[in-house]
Amino acid sequence: MLFRSDRILIVGSVGQAPRLAEYGRELAGFPVSVVTPADVPQFAALLADAAWVLSAETAAAHLATALDRPAVVLLGGGHFGQCGPWTRSARQRWLTHPLPCFDCAWACPHPEPWCLTRLTPEEVGAALAAVVAADQ
Image 1 (tube, rainbow, N blue to C red):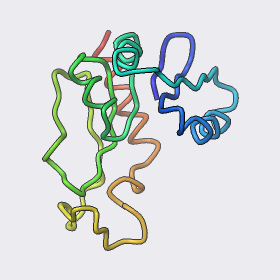
Image 2 (image 1 turned 45 degrees about the horizontal axis):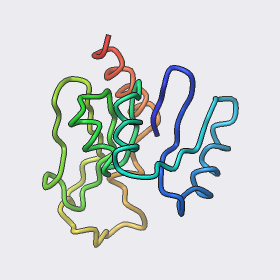
Image 3 (image 1 turned 60 degrees about the vertical axis):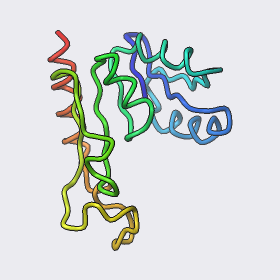
Image 4 (image 1 turned 90 degrees about the vertical axis):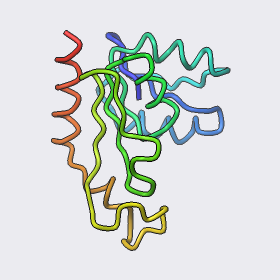
């Protein structure tokens, strides 16, 4: 999810658009647009223009970090440390819920990936506030 000063952009592939539209409806009351960039350069341009980025550990997270954009990245423990967390500045925060089962190779012993689902809205909100403050 990207935030510009005027709206929230939920970004993904054309095939993901219906599911992304559902996410947008859950953000009722906020100005939301679903965007399906045509290619990587268009996607990178959206990230470069974002006020902040909220993402799982995906290409968006890595491009936002490379571009030094304010970003909060939700990072699971499946391959923790292999591809993240890394930062360029205080503008990036990677969040996870540490568990003894880290490095499980996504053979999760729990009913759901608690390393992600046990993150609280308060933790995510505090991280967003911190990266926005670091950008001031």
